[in-house]
Image 1 (cartoon, one colour):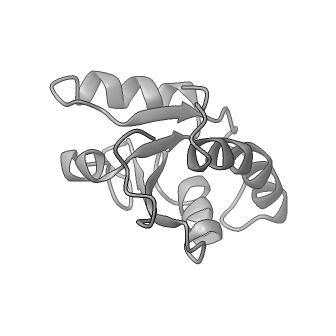
Image 2 (cartoon, one colour; image 1 turned 90 degrees about the vertical axis):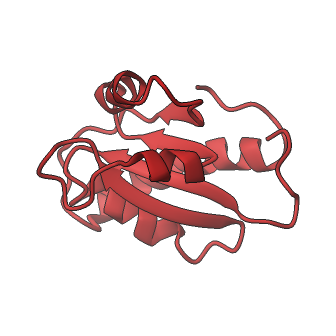
Length: 124
């Protein structure tokens, strides 16, 4: 990522609809990774924690659980210079910390993070 200090953790925002299952699971999985600072949020009005302008100004990369989330962010915050948004296409069929969800997240997120952190380009 251009301009990022190499010794500072990458700021990652995980986003799903209600911030109850997918994005909090991702936040929990990656919160102890020393390469990262992580947050999670939701796009819907009843979300446990809703995506804010401050979140998007803070984040260097957003992992959206599905295309709807990425589109919502782009529409709601079109006035901002948005961080890179990576759409994961992880369906809303898992509960918080479901072992299958953890596997799917690791399989989807790890290659993207490794590419970003090594200076490559992730699929946006």
